[in-house]
Length: 285
Image (cartoon, rainbow, N blue to C red):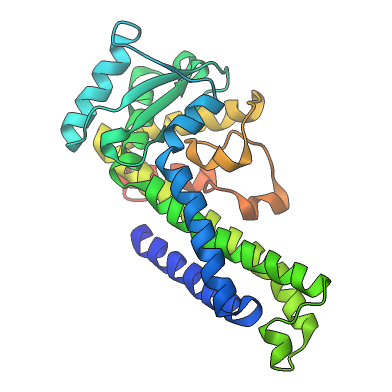
């Protein structure tokens, strides 16, 4: 179901790109913006592991540093038919983790100091399995494609805005259309693209929860871990960037109300309820 939802959301992004490109950017503007956004996100995708690991000052671990972590990761990669990822430690007290890398052969899983302090071995196993599920599902690629399309939409809107400011005549003006409608589209389209992109990210989190629970063999351990991480992430701040927040198993950023519309993660209550339903057949209170 979440795979189908991701497909529909990607399709909606593509239609939005075509619509706004034809309305305010013209065919030429749409092509230029798409190519430029694609090049930017290709570089980001290809070097994403090095970039994000450097941002969070992650240190690569050896087997002698954390034999327990290596053992459980090897156990689950063997079960899932995945290559062994590189393991990293992030010097942060906020309990969190993320996976990165352009494909399973170049994957890395990073955990913080904080997560090692508060989780039991079974809970940590669930978290690592969640991140390995992201690797198996190639979610970095999905996120990069979504970011490319959303980025192209934002660029077209920006191009049209500056053209309007400096007296340019877009496709809407050539057809005698209402420039106010074009201006409204310049504002609304990037916001809509961002919301769809965030919805794709939330859908992939549900898939990783389900895949990780099956890989670890205990959905309740992952559910328990998510509860702990959610509470502690709100209590312990982390110097995280909004551009990379979607990578973490729980959002390292705080925010509520209207900001939840742009959240990269599903509501924690729903994530936990779905994991409990895998065991009990329905969510328990």
